[in-house]
Image (cartoon, rainbow, N blue to C red):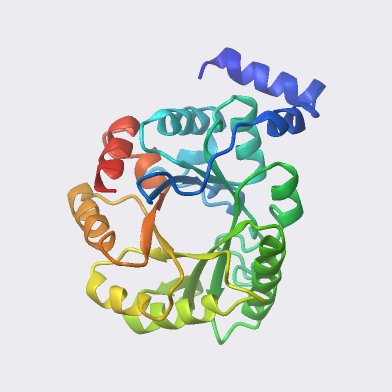
Length: 293
């Protein structure tokens, strides 16, 4: 990535918006799972929710050129299967030619802006299933945070069920990321206890008219033994989410390694931990994660 390529990207967007559809039409696709039966996805859907921080930098993801450069580095590493992002980011990568032979997961509900009073009324303001089909992408990701004290969660749940149906109608994977959530001092916090994770998995597994194309995206926590028991609530395949950037990379990798032994778990979906590692070595962080698979 160079300043010139960013300038050219903006020029193409301004003068030839149809170039996005043209690039999507000729992109080389691949199966969700390769020969290893595992999946390594790099996530970059945080900015559309207004969540721009990584590590100690509250605006780490605010520089789009820098983010795209980090994504391009990650996607070029051996063993990286694809990327998760919102329309703007995925279309930038599409125009840069970075999505060839990659699994592409579009982020669907982004209405629950970080810190907003309506955060748990997480409406579908991103990709629709019809968009993912038109662009020849491979999957849609949806976040399902459920707080029984917040009526907005019902709107989120209904939207999620509709998205699962719409994706299944097109034979596209629905990647559902469920949490039981609560507000603590006005801020949304996810309950990562084994009981709460099991409950969220059970609810997510039953969304829609079919679960044939549904995968789960589940957290990695310190107590992975109990989370492993929570995963017994479903037979659906699961991927692990990376979470916040940790100051102890070795401990994070140990938790990933342990969780990857669980029978449901098919891979990793990791964002800021790989794109903004403490030593700023994106390639090294990605290679370490791939080795765990």
